[in-house]
Amino acid sequence: MEILKYGNPILKMRCDSISIDEAEEANKLLKKMVDIMHESRGVGLAAPQVGISKRMIVIDLYEEPENIYKIINPKIVWKSEEIVEFSEGCLSIPGIYEKVKRPASVSVEYFNEKFESCFIDHATGLFSSCLQHEIDHLDGKLYIDRLSRIKRARTINKFKKLQEQINFKENDDIVDEE
Image (cartoon, rainbow, N blue to C red; front, side, top):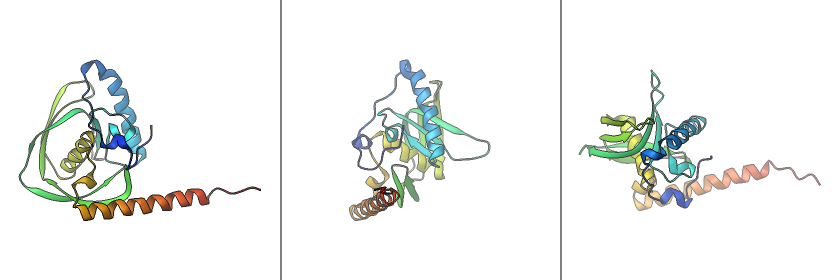
């Protein structure tokens, strides 16, 4: 499994819910997703980012004590009226960060990896922003979709230029041995 980058059509698709019959397979995938998220130094990862069109996300805010959220079929059931702005990045758009406006607090219903019903009540700060960002992925939205048209176009151009530089450096490392 590898992280899909901006432009991959899977990232724009709405994901399917997971049934209890799929719980065992979902749990295996959630464990892999946690490993990929940690390897990539991210705080959140959604299943479509690794090519799986299912409603699953993982979040690790690297708090003490360690609390890794493995979330199945999340649903935002409440949003605050207060709006805040957070700088966001995305493992599918590496190296690019932009300020995104979102509700300051959200409440989320979901199932954990044991398929037990759970509830996050009034998440705030980074946790709220991360939940909203990852749940957006499940609906086929990227954080750049929440930017103004001009800012979004500028951000996409920055990302494309960054990708060109990375590809150039990778090709530059190949030595022709004729």
